[in-house]
Amino acid sequence: MKQYFIYLILATGVSFNHLSAQDLSATEIVKKADEKFNGEKSSYSLMSMTIIRPGWQRTIDFKSWTFGRDFALTLITAPAKEAGQSFLKRGPEMWNWNPSINRLIKLPPSMMSQGWMGSDYTNDDILKESSVVNDYLHEMAGEENIDGRICYKINMTAKENASIVWGKQIRWIDKKEFLVLKAELYDEDGYLVRTETGSDIKVMDGRTVTSKIKLIPEEEPQNLTYIEIREIKFNMPVEESYFSQQNMKRVR
Image (cartoon, rainbow, N blue to C red):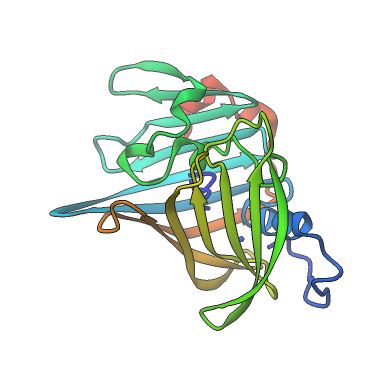
């Protein structure tokens, strides 16, 4: 979901609790929060996404593997009619494999802002095409209390010519555990598009993480998307060759 889906979108496994705001720049804080979710080298996650609309809702189960910032593979495991679909990112190129029609589709950059599987997540969130660290300028905007936890408030403005979906982001990152507890995402004209909140903090694979994420579209607040992380592993052995068009057709 990548990014956050899945951006979605956990800690580096190293204790930074002794560091103060004076010790870390805004960019360093964003980087630590990003590495907490994605791992310093690689990650594997098992997740479910519940899409809620007036009168109906549905849940999609999926697995996701990442290797650095350039490689990602996502496999849908349920419901049955969509199980087996996979999404691959290799550098700037992305594909979708649909076994029901036996077709491999290359996704153009213009599709990154579109909703993934009918949810409020974008393809960019899941495939992590843009980087919250490298594609944005970061500025400290003070501290605020979110659900009883003191957070850094950080303004993020897209760099000129960066290939991004969101022109601006504001993130509230927990000072103790480097968890993204809230995020506001704005389009390139400065309009708020959606708000994300992280909750249900747990220890998974030795790291303290937010295991549930809620997405609320600004213009349609009755529409919701929930992500639940059921399992996550960090820095597991995986090779670049795992992220291939051949493997996206046979991964299980």
